[in-house]
Length: 90
Image 1: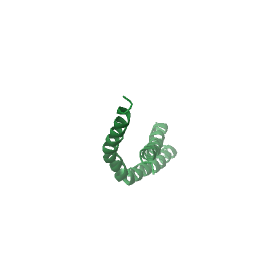
Image 2 (image 1 turned 120 degrees about the horizontal axis):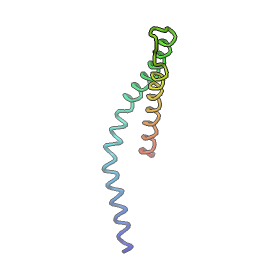
Image 3 (image 1 turned 30 degrees about the vertical axis):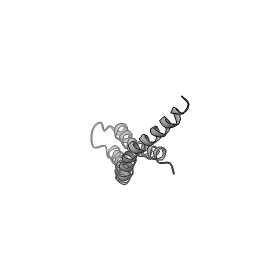
Image 4 (image 1 turned 180 degrees about the horizontal axis):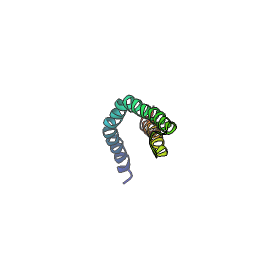
């Protein structure tokens, strides 16, 4: 019975490597696009929220909502980086 566990462990490792390789490759290929878009939306969203809040264009501008969404893009970029760091171990 003890000789079954090394075989299961080896097959589980091989299956994980076969399944995770395309996922990791896709995440690494999309990293520059995700970084650019999240950075652009973070900076652009914050600048737009501050500009609209200071200009007082409308009666009620949802400053906190827009600023929160912009900060959410920054948080998403950090989580994306964290997932890559966990999956890709040097």
